[in-house]
Length: 246
Image 1 (tube, one colour):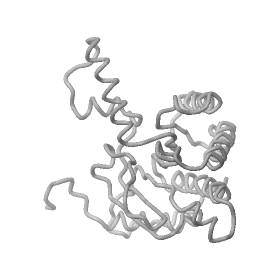
Image 2: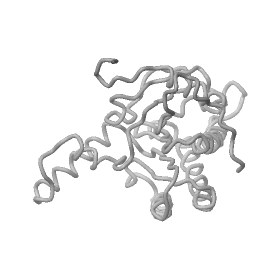
Image 3: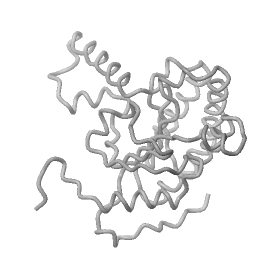
Image 4: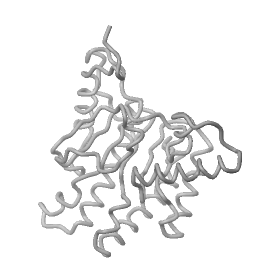
């Protein structure tokens, strides 16, 4: 794919771009309903939007994009919708495996992969293997993911290591190394399209100091211009992390 022109300029307070953007992919079902289409059509459109926004983030010089694709709560949806989502995820991972190295995008999966099918687990393993071969922009896909579940799983891993004498005194830095996002910087900016204004159990630990940006635009309609608006809003804010501006 040809590089998208970066329309973000340095004039917005000369503040740096975010290194890491996280996005809650919200509004796929409503997008489809407005068009008289099945919800699965909205998910397909949303997957294409993810592809475009991942390239846009790479071309704008970001290091990471993390998206909330399927939560631990999404299993409550109809069996037909869940099955369609799993097929879509499998198709996307297969396509990603074919293009990751040539397109310069790494991919990791956050979440409890033990809850996925053997086929999806194999695809996840393959994407992780390919990602370990080179450096560059990384897209993180949250599958069967919940922020509280991630923290509990991390606590269990630390407890097991501590009991076996493999872990030292617990600190925030050490605990972060047990999370799914180990080695990935915390999101600077969390974007939620779709009109809702909550984080819905997404990256609870990592978003402690993230800037939030909410928009009514439904995810399938979220394009490069909307991304740039969110980045511009981020660059217009002062991030003090509990301190006082000089």
